[in-house]
Image 1 (cartoon, rainbow, N blue to C red):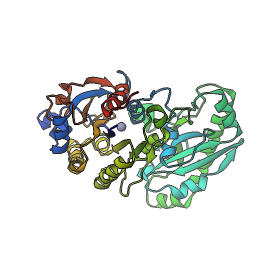
Image 2 (cartoon, helix red, strand yellow; image 1 turned 60 degrees about the vertical axis):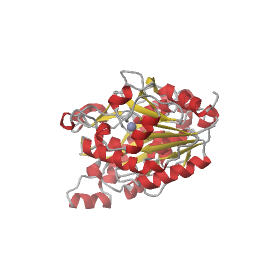
Image 3 (cartoon, helix red, strand yellow; image 1 turned 90 degrees about the vertical axis):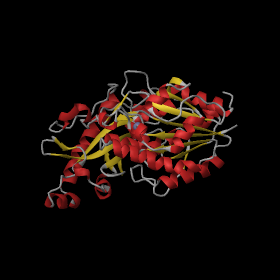
Length: 414
Ligand code: ZN
């Protein structure tokens, strides 16, 4: 069987930009290696999620890996926790948490606490608290981010009643552009169970308790003196718990390896039972060490049947900066390193998890360009881009179609 490499540029697709002669950042990019793969391979476009749904990175990745993006989705908190390599055994509720700034009436002033860069001391000060038989562990992640893990008898009881924890978000991030000036939300159990309501109440108590501690913590006293927003509230969202699901190996018989920088993608890979290879300088940012990641990919291809290589820069350029030139530049810098990839006995697929549009700085449901090189099949497409790929012989495929196609081309019977 051939090896399979799936390269995902996060948020790869985009819309034509008037100032770029109606071309997209991908179409603008000088990318001889990607174009060569497109020329010698087959192209198409992917619609990762069914039409009409907002494409989140985590759900789109699950779909591309051939999983049910709803049934198999454990919640963002679980994926973030696994991304930090925390060991979860199914008896926890995990939340994604952000340190934010609130005033004395708990009105949200800054959901990222002035982009605080290090929350380790603050997290340490409020981690380990016990309320109503529930232990609250807060683990710091990148920047203002953290993961909040709840354990204890009430949690076990709740999880035996519901398939997935559905404690609502306290981060009013869905309140739209007016989220600033909104009070933080009270958590509740969407499943409306008695135990879930107790957990929600304990979480609220934990948030109020930690708000007091954080307000007077030396880190925040210093921030107050320097006129910086205080990191004085733990905003939670994306509750979830480990669900039973087949591993990648059980599902496809493939030994799989992931090379990624951002915790979320490592978490998705670990959730599916892939080995995550840590790469020096892989940061999940625009400054990530592209060369090291590609080098590690080549080594991993010797040992594993399937390698998932992820780059986040394309999404960051579009979503955080809305800058098409930055997106083009990132694609070019990755492309430069792709010339050394093997082309024998391999299936190489390149696509994105969704489109991220520079003009709106948001994900969109626009189909994402796809190329598949297997050394055999070819079509008339000569370059890798949104318009060109639509003419490819693969046509429009769904997220769920990708893995069966790759396995077939790889020579694997499923
Ligand atoms: Zn994404």
